[in-house]
Every structure is written in C-alpha cells, then in structure tokens.
Amino acid sequence: MAKAGHDVHFLVRSGRAAIMARGIRVKTPTERFHLKKAQTYATTGDIGPCDLVIVSVKATANAALAKLLPPLLRPDTLVLTLQNGLGVEEPVAEVVGANRVLGAICFVGVMRTAPGVVQCSFPGLILLGEFGRPAQARTRDLAKMFETAGVKCEAQDNLEEMRWKKLVWNVPFNGLAIAAGGVTTDVLMADEGLRMLARRLMEEILEAAAKFGHAIPRSFMDLQFERTAALGQYEPSSLIDYREGRAIELEEIWGEPVRRAKSVGVPVPRLEMLYWLIKRLLAARETPKRKR
Image (cartoon, rainbow, N blue to C red; front, side, top):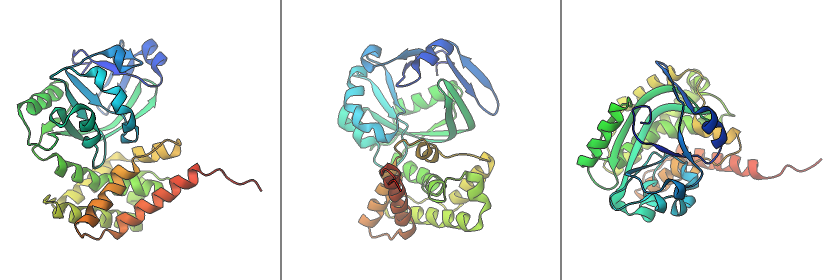
C-alpha cells in the first residue's frame, strides 16, 4: 500500500533502527522493490487515529490489543485482522466493537528474513470479509484498494467459512512440520505417510466445517497439495516460530477447531492428537533440561 502511494504508518516492535536507516525491501517471484522511507513508530500513541488499522501481530499477542488499538481509533476507523486460526476476530471486537471489524484470510507464503527484509515466495490471494456479516460496500472498496496496490484480493460474504478453508492448509502443514521433527513442506510432500496423514487431517477439517454449514469441496484439498508443491522447500510460519523459541498459535489453529468439532459431535482424532503432540512439544521446550 505504501508502494502504491497510500499514507501508511508502521508500528515496529523490533528492528526499528534498521528500518529507519535502510527502509523496507520486498522480494517476490516477479519483482523486487525498496520502500526507502517507511513511516515507523514505536507506539500506537505516536501514530494516532487512522482510517484503517491492519492487525498483523500473531494471535498470541492479542492480550496487547487493549493497549495497542484505542489510540488508533476515530469514529469511522475500520480494523482488519490478518491473523490465522478460528476465533481471532472476537478479541479485536472486544476492544473496538464488532461493527468495525473485518477479517482477511491470506493464502500467501511470506517470511521476514531480517529487519525490514521480506521474502514472498507465493503472493497468492487475500480473501476479505466482515465479522458476522456479509460483505458491505466498504469491504469491496477495501478489496479494490488492495487490488490497485498490486495485492490480489477478493471480498467474500462468509468470513467464518474462509477461516475453515485456511485451516485445511494450516492444520496439517504447520502442524506436521513441527510434529515430524522440524521439516519443510517439500519433506512432507515427499513422504507417503506424512502426505497421507495431511490428507486425513484435511478431511477432518472438512467434516467439522460441514457441521457448521460450510460445504468445502474435496477438490479444495487437491488444490492445497498443488500449491504446496509449488512452494518447494518452504518453512511454515509456525515452524519458524517454534524453532526460534517464539509462541505459536496453538489454540487458534489446532485447539479451537478441536473444541468446535467436538461441540457438534464430529470426531477429529488425528487433529486432536496433533494438537496434544504440539502442546507437549511446546511444554518440553519451556522445561529446563536437567543437568546430568
């Protein structure tokens, strides 16, 4: 958006000095660009009220929203969250009010490789929707703004269905990358057993989503495998966070789908097992090793 000329202000929680000195560099499969001067701030109070707030922190940081968001609001401010998982709009709505909240599902492959340096291996698509409502004129206007800025974006009427669709990829590939010992997506794709387990996990997500009225076609699973094959040696974001000792969206990506599935009587044994395995690995990571 900044590249397209919009007045964008960045809240930078780490690496701000590097961005102030060198700007932001983005590399995609088709282009490279350098935003030489990025408007960066250490606090949202320094930014002040905005027309649109884009929440791109991990859902694990949602406890900070009560402090981060209020200084950015004016009466007509929209708040768009790009977070992964189920139940991520609710914490935003609790702070700013549900009528302001939009959500987006990002079918992209992106990682920050250094402060102010972004590698985008798969530009993909953003699906944009309203929290608890069909798409409105403002939703479509925002989608057009993204499109004009070079980001493929579509306004959709059912945000919750889109969140279940994103889980079809996130649950198996983010989860198995960790549970299988810290492997990239090409390893998961090349291993017959892991690839089959990924498909079974996807099937459980589809069955649970159907109980909530979201009919996701089985062909959508095939599409996820096609897209993943194109990523090559890709590290899912949860694996990167796990390796670097950061919190991962355990509850939003695995725990909440398990709870919702069980609440409507859908058994999800593989998903539940993956949830507990990752939870156990996280607990072991936090436990100091005993001296021998």
